[in-house]
Figure 1 (cartoon, one colour):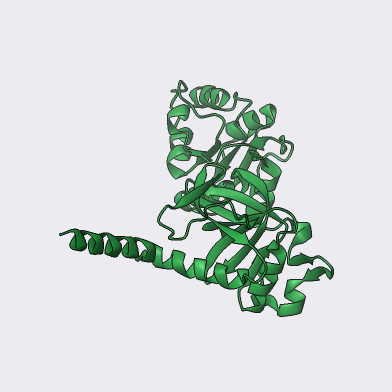
Figure 2 (cartoon, helix red, strand yellow):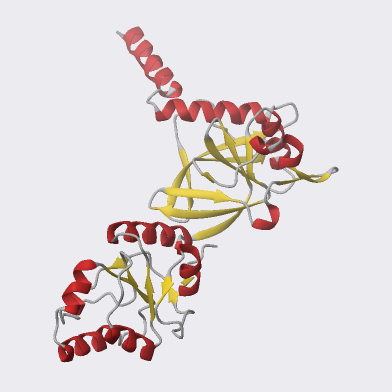
Length: 312
């Protein structure tokens, strides 16, 4: 089940080493959107569509405009700008110092007034990147995430089907483990999912009959990764004689995780099948498809051509 997260203003201060101009402000206000607002129009008095729920970023342009006002007008504009309780914080870029009127009004409202030495465009980019990472929708999936030939493969299946054993074999063959048993998946953009392990399970593998193993300790730092983009989902299921499994690979399946469709394969498991090799080949075949070569489609086209020639 996915969940939307929030970032506290104090977490933003700690992560980006912000200067604090209003130490008595409410640092527990929640930031719930990745968008950044440049409040030039709001400071000019137009507040109809003011995005008060966003982090407010002031640069040299906004500050010089504010400082150029007479004291009474400046006080009115600052009063209106700081009156929104849903505004999480105001950030000044370029190491600028806020006017006394802005500091007083923000302090009175419990609004955090922060500063950074980054230029305004750089500050906006850093803030957006930080918030996108922290506020990305997130879900927990039961499975194993491995990096095979640079392809992030999420292995799913019922408990005891052999997911962890397959991951162990892949690690022994030179690939890398990201997460075993539980995978935290975040949607960091419209079509990008990134998986990572829960902190408690990082680098750990559970092999029934052996116990919990530390993959980094056993195989070295090159055998693990802390996160990886999820590219393919491979579902392992017990072999069923009455199931018509796909033998050509023409029909491509997908599975929906959060709001993203991910290519999916179903691999039946039975004694004697080398799942690690099959997953390696699946990763290589997916890479070939990405560069424009689909072996199944080429075969189907050649078969259709041969049938047509025979009919003629």
